[in-house]
Length: 263
Image (tube, rainbow, N blue to C red; front, side):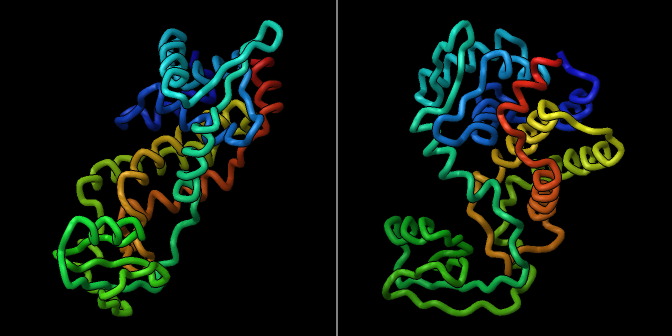
């Protein structure tokens, strides 16, 4: 059941897509219980999912799926079930965390343009693995510290034209970034007038922010700061995500248990 304080948080993101319960759980565990030995008690998880407006049967189906997929494991401690990430779940969460929780890039960050002699799948895969972004056949851009393949021509970037800035943006995601920016801005306005939030409400808030940011940010390469438009919705979202997560730090699991018991 939605509480008086969690309802406005959930409502701010209600119009966005990608709110699958199993994916929400991945975001929740990755944010709150990524450490080895971290576990969330069953009653605490149930309280959080209810606050996220998720039905109990949907939570049970999601738990079952994530256990079958090797993401989560459960064990009984007395009469209470405890749920935690598996080694695979921790590894995959840790691999994504640097991108999810990174500070917004410096817009004066140096960048480079790389031109290759040939255009093929192998060299394309090599460059993309280094974080380069293709802007046209045989031409890529990336951070200045990224390693260009042998035999390619690397040029230090200067102030880029607007067409190049736009060429590296994931244009297919622009409507979703616009919607997320609206949701984050609405949320920021609601939180400005909110009273004190307990650990449970902060967990709900962080899950919604991390989940909706994660599902977009991980769909495309990180853009070099020197190529980002300051008014690009993806960058504006990054600024708000960073501000909100910093303002509402991750609650301790023991504090979550106490808040859940009192709810």
